[in-house]
Amino acid sequence: MIDRTNTIQSAPAITETLASVPDVHLQFLQKLSPDDLANWSNRVQAAYELTEQGSTEEGQQQLWLVLQEIAVCKAKNLGDQQYLAGFLEAVDIIKQIAHRQPQSGSFQRSQTADPISESEISVVRQEQIRAVSHLAEIYRQLECGSLALCFLGKIQAGNERGWVDRCIADVYFQAALLADDTNYYAANEYGVFLARHGDWSNARHMFLASNQIQPNQHATQNLNTMASHPAVSDEESATPTLREAIRNAQQSATNIFR
Image 1: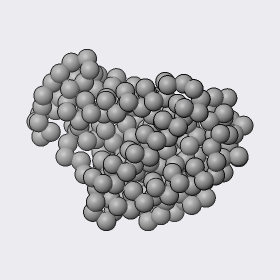
Image 2: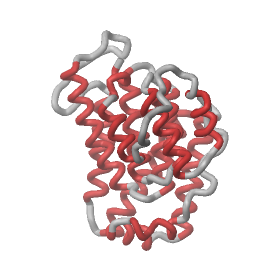
Image 3: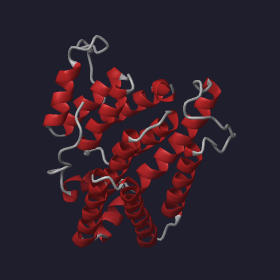
């Protein structure tokens, strides 16, 4: 699989997608100036470049600062503190997963320990779903927010030490795509992540979705690489939508925990 050589270069302009945006999110987008969006986008790109230069922790911190700033701005502009509260809860959930202490129970386990039980998987999956829901709602149709989440997923996946890091990366990728379903770059990167962990069918669906959003060399190359893999069927009668593919990945996420 391939890594990033460039990020989104020609995603649809906000004005092209406003018709499909719920009123509350449309209201927020209309309150933003081009300078606001440019500032956030430039900082997201600069933060990821820091990680590529070896300053991983600093890059992650900068990405989170941008995400927090957007959540604060949305809460203030819309007069609704649920967005900031949702952001803080998502951060708390991710921290709990990182410490292997979900809210519905506590289980201390080494990253290299035996596979966790089905009941423990269920606990963490519920926490993941809540975090994804919060993040996707806050950054709906906001390209810079979606891209920041995707970058966090790539960073987490690239430094993974076990199932905990895979769970957190999964949260970031899903939230990125549910926030902005025009993010073909995130669809491709999530496909890379799924393929790396043996979920070949859903990885293929992500690569197909990436190309459907916007034809791109990375997704095409990854599809060509997967074409000869015995676990991938080219005879599937229908390709799921991006949201269906995400739900399928959520339901077959067992490999992430192994």
